Image (cartoon, rainbow, N blue to C red; front, top):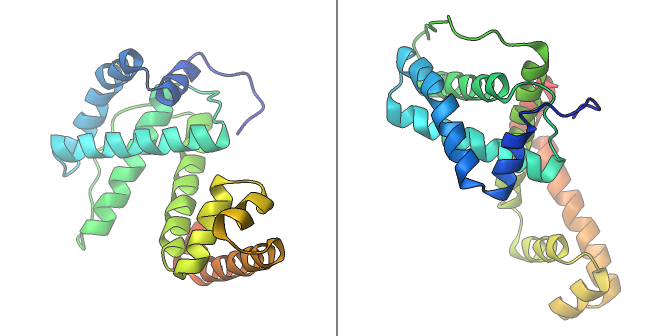
Length: 195
């Protein structure tokens, strides 16, 4: 993300990556009450708030693991903003009526807003990729899953009992098909418009 020095709250990101139960408990104790309160004031309940918190922590974990997230803003602002946006998306998805939001809470700085936006886009891309990946044929899925797990194409060919040339060509065709399917998805343009 940024090239700035990591914020002291980077420890929360590291705790998620290490599944540090003590710090994870601290995250819930320090930050969950504000999120639960916000969601309860905005057409939700405690159960839905807990779901949003859990989904948000999973999204942060995934981004930290795959994109090496380095936080340069307070975790509280970033986490709250992500939860808030996830809740607003949930409300928009599940209701035809106008949504009224009771705002009063935090001061959100530009840095946490940028981090939240990047995390939401990252999560949307991953969801789209997974959804489209499942639509591929069995042979393409098997080949691509194997190449994700094993980096050496020679090993992939040996594992699948195919020639090296066949595996390379088939991988290229499968990736081309996957790319085309992703780009033709209406969700792809929605994600592009977020950038």
